[in-house]
Length: 403
Image 1 (tube, rainbow, N blue to C red):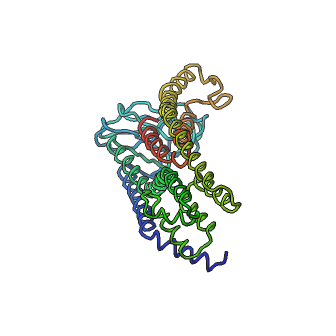
Image 2: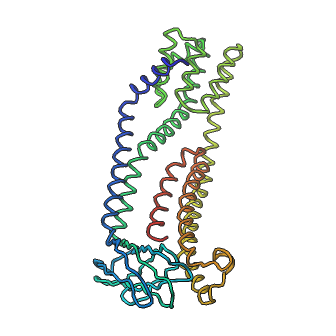
Image 3: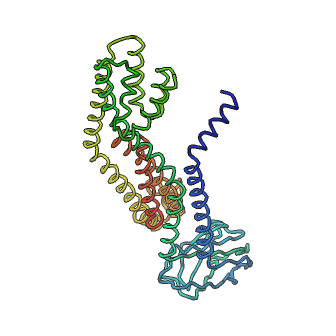
């Protein structure tokens, strides 16, 4: 195909889908802008304190700074990020907030999740060296972020709206095509039945097809009118049928048209072929309906399995791993069951890593579960896109508030 033909096809596609393309592009731009503004606003509203002022920590001197938290009883996801120099596991530093020991720094970069029970409106953080050492450590930077449940909920809801704006038009187009194809497949046997009646009345196959123009076939009417117009223009009959099959976008109709073309070209009994094709399509539709009704329970099972999967991850992340970390600490750092990160590994240090992978697994499971549910219940992966969207939204809420 030459470049000019590609350009002509592109122009025709634009002419026939101009409004749809503009809608999809506009929704994508608005969704991305909304997501960007939401992220910028969330960063500004949750960032509470930062400083790059250096403080030397010695056997006698401590590092100390203050920060304010509005409504500490509502604070959530309060994270204190600290950067040091000359800090390692052999020269740890103890971190206090309002005289409560909250963590121990064993590396030059440390992030501390602060519980709301230790927070006040005006807070004081102190970092001191508990053991005697000969090398000074330095606190080089501090950053504090904190949010409330309402801020977190607003951030999540706005992100979901942005995602819907970006993907909803495309998913709507795909799902509309899917529904339209099902309607066409449902009316096609009726069309074949009327064509058979025409051939029995002594008409040729092209004449019988043209005689059906006045029939009512729902979504199929427009395509039949196009086929009749092509026949009037003198386009070869087999090419007209192939174009008709391509326009429907249905694999079932494409296979049926191929059979009809072969029978027409070979000069066989076209009436028997048409009746057989129509009956086969009706049988296929009936089997699909039976399968969908039988697999409805499988669809529900897919959702339940996804919820159970999320529940297991929540239990592991919020209950089992913290308790194992406490048990490991009580046993003097002994690795428990090989999940502490290797010989002498600290499970508590790896909890954040487990949490990150748990979050990724939620989205991976949601994506593939949605596609499988659609394939089982409706027979096509495209039909699973709506299930994927639902599972993604539910997984995003679970990751944000529970993991």
